[in-house]
Amino acid sequence: MKNALYFLLMPLVSAFAGGWQAATPAADPAQLQTQLARDEKILHDWPNLARYRQENASLPAPSPSEERVVFMGDSITDFWGRARGKFFPGKPYINRGISGQTTPQMLIRFRPDVINLKPRVVVILAGTNDIAGNTGPSSLEDIEANLTSMVQLAQANNIRVVLSSVMPVCDYIKPQTARRPPERIIALNQWIEEFSTKNNLIYLDYYSGMLDDHKMLKQELTYDGLHPNEAGYEVMSRLAAAALAKAFSN
Image (tube, rainbow, N blue to C red; front, side, top):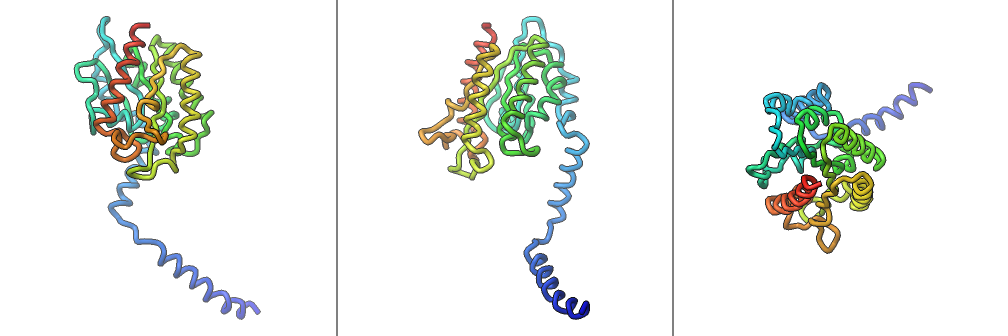
């Protein structure tokens, strides 16, 4: 009976295995090596504390009259003035964005990359990668808790806070709304605005300033439906400058 069952099942198992193997593409060794290096880096330094360690160590303390600002964020901040756009030329503003990061990673590096630099103001732009699940599923409550902790750390160190809305996305160029549903962005932004009002923060509304009539990121302000192009960074610079003027006048 066992032998009969074996001979009956083996063709099915072989067919299944053969079909699975045929459906699995051959791995590219170079791509696997790149992915392995990336994974090892994340394993050894998940919040990427090493990214700015040397720059932070060599940065002199601000002068008494210096209006130093630190921009904390993800790739939208990271690329600002590096890949696209101009990052406040002539201003003592420091870019501490890291591509792909989520709020728990930013919270871990908030002390070395913000507090220790002794800015007068920090501009926080975060949350889109949490919504996309870059470091695992995140509820809105999780994102809000991490933003709250960053704000509390800044206030405990006499750093004024400009809290930014999450930017809209669009599908005009590449599909983006599936990973970053607009309704979740709207809900998070509503909380950010209310939290800013309650806690005497400056609310920097990138969202409304970059939205089209279809409630999407304006196509002319982006190159991929998520990140700003040069025109997008011009809009962001103008909005950020206005928010910082309010922060310094308070």
